[in-house]
Length: 213
Ligand code: Z5A
Image (cartoon, rainbow, N blue to C red; front, side, top):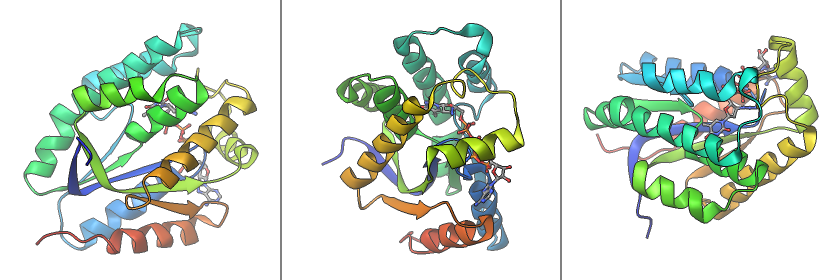
């Protein structure tokens, strides 16, 4: 049995850069708000003032090179604050929390991408996070297509976006492995389709969640 507490109203969106996570986040939040529910729409790294400052350190191209270990500890420091200050209080008062990225991104980027041991990541998750989503939507898209979309939006790459394609291929493979290892929690969504079709699929997946009244 998982040592992590699963909250039925906690949903995460994962995928590589340019997969459309921000676009899907907006669609899910609007669908839930239209139903009159309280929804906290958030992102990682970030979601609190301190965690957003850590995000700045993590992504600033001026801080290259950062060791893989430093990167891992920074994302978990931001997450520990995000969970304590934003996510758990909202879930405990009955709100939905929809997060653009969460711990699966650490398994994909610091585990798959940087090659850090998954057991070490699992230890941090158990000791400093303690929770997991009921549903994770993985937006899956080829690396070249995702990078082209992200460049179209903002041509200046941050520190992680400056990595080579091979790094992002490993990230994609690690996400798909996570989905395979946790089939009850993950839905893999084909993100090569139009934004409207992808968003509609994501909203349908959300509607299949069994949430106590
Ligand atoms: N990171 C990490 O290493 N470890 C961790 O534990 C965590 C994070 C939590 C910041 O994440 C970085 O942090 C990230 C991983 C690392 N680095 N990288 N790479 P982020 O989520 O803020 O950054 P991102 O992955 O680069 O996200 P993004 O570029 O903002 O992509 P997105 O949110 O998935 O896509 P979008 O903004 O919704 O869409 C991008 C563009 O494509 C935009 O112009 C859209 O209009 C367009 N779009 C969206 N959907 C479609 C479809 N379906 N068709 C066509 N065009 C579309």
